[in-house]
Image (cartoon, rainbow over all chains, first blue to last red; front, side, top):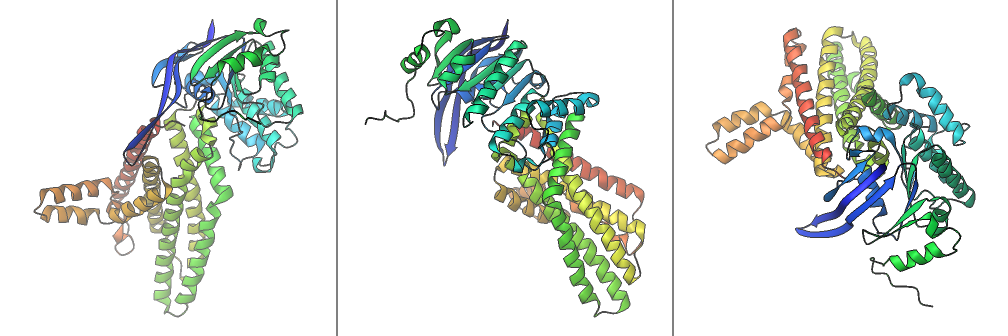
Length: 253
Length: 254
């Protein structure tokens, strides 16, 4: 059973300025399936289409062609979102609210019944280590604390599918380890985790399978058996699969 | 309903923590200035001036606050990307817009109520004011504010520029005070295109003549049916703006 299916999905961004239309390809004919209960990593260079794929499955973008199915339902679908948790690459939270108020908001939006909401909020704050800072406004939080608050909002409703966009980018080594532990904890509870990353070493440690995106296309699909016990196997596969599309050449010293 | 309430709650908190107190402070300054001018007038004129000045200042500050807050309401949340997290939860886009609009209108309404209470107290020094007509006029000013907030929201989403949305809101606000005159001029115009444009504008802009009880102070309050019709008109106009805003918002990608 698949948690997530991309069927021939293309996304083209059209921008019009003073009558001149420019088109950028975000995704091009992506076919990809993510199984229930697995940890799947999306790897790729900047502009490869990782964030576009995630925004399509979260309903923030609409596909130009093709279809995205999440937990058995075509997206965009508001009701499906109650079963999905999403943490973007930065903590885009409302900074005028406190940590607790933010979580209360997302608990209510996630349709957690009001009777159990306060308990759930307190529990999540404790789990991400923010109980002492819970009543401080987010404008006073450090980057690491904001990242924790962002993870808490993604998990507050105990989702079946957790989508993490670049969850370790910009974090210190201790925080990276905590995110790794979190992903493995989610997997142990039968959750499906999809995350995008540039960090091959992190992906190696936690993923069951990975997909390498290049130029909006799926360049390669690999499973754990192909890289486990073979140092550099994933890095070599990555290097041979991707092509720079941003016009930047290699560094030649 | 829970979803709309959640969006309403955080919008109200956001406004109360940031900007809503400002209009009340400005109102205090306006009243103080008015009091100084009034001290040079006779007793009857003093009361009348303070009444008119207070109501006008209350409505003007509420209107400016409502338009200013509303044009930033969604666009800033798009710019800061906070909208990513809201719309990736099970929130329909109409629920988000309705909650945001209601929260803003409530914040401005609270400021209006505060200013109104301060004004009524200040009027005691000038012989007081009849409470029921005062509340009726304040209620209509609130309805005008809610209508302008809905229109400003629509304009901000359609134009995607805060400056342009504010300019057009100002344009429609002025136009809204001349809707019957526009229709009268359209009738008199011999040119079909001019007539069509004038009629279109007179209907697109809110008709504030329906929300202005000119006789409230001179010949007593209009009858309750007039008030019911006025509030019905405001609700219908705001609902139409919100429905159109939803249509525009549904097409947006983030």
